Length: 434
Image (cartoon, rainbow, N blue to C red; front, side, top):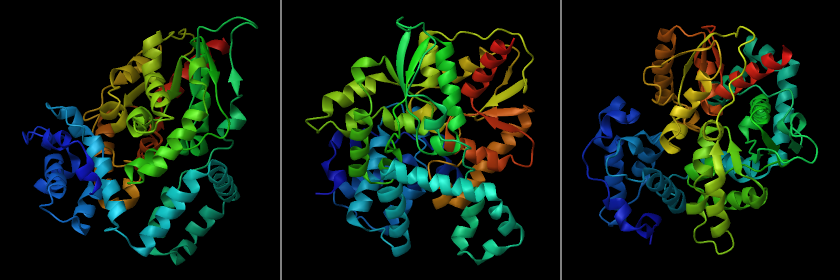
């Protein structure tokens, strides 16, 4: 029995084929092919579950052409759980080995099985990459075309390598931080998830998140050397590795001692809220995973829930105009759309310009910009065009993948890319400076 056959069949039957998902699906809008639409992919999955269609390389290609942006899930009037179907289909592709290729197998093993399973090794690689970038050798080799000696695929990927942060999260954030008086109980006690790419390339955003939480009466607990959340594994068909990482992540926190577990990365957060489903058959972790799901909160969601303390309007801000791009997995996966705007609107002197198609995928989609560079580039061009037309000096987003993708697309425009929590932290710091 394949994994699609093991699903509750009602999940596969739920799609009514009404077509309301079609105009929201970037790959269908690009190709106009039914097979590249959500309902087309669900039909393929159902045919495989029924044994009417063999599972082969063409199905694998189609499922990896899907962005997994979950815009279809927002549009669906029947409440189809496309995320579950999508992850199950990819897991069956990997189990059946229909997409195997030596080069593909090597890179999957190196990233999914090695680097992202061992946080200290991942940070060691980040530290080496930081030294390489600070030395200037990367720019020198690029300038004199020495990187042309790399294989074509690596040569195209090299410019997308994120800049490593000057210091990683454990160096910037203490294990426990609070502004409450000694012996006094804080208003809230929360745990902070530092992430993988967020930790290596955007550790300052983790620091900003802590400062914002402190300013809103929270004590912040940040476990050291946190593991990957497993979203990369789940979205790429490695469900057993995702389950192992979920168990490790749950064990990193004392769930009874915190009011919430805070995530500031949209893609990670969407997966982190699904541990209950991921571990529902695990007798040791099923109950813990359900408790975990109840406590995981996106930073914007949490601030809106407890009430954002507006900063005092003491110092003119820079930038003064901002637009907001929605991370797909934050708005479609977590249904958090209004709250990031509330954060931005709480900042005195900051003008929010609405972005057309704000919840249309930018093309990052995990590693989609690596595996499907042409389609990713088209989506980025569409997104960048809308950002330019707003006239905003800055675009805020809420996911490291989106952040990197937008920064690449806007590098020649002088438009700053940042995150709502960073702008709020800057406003609080300006308040303290006065």
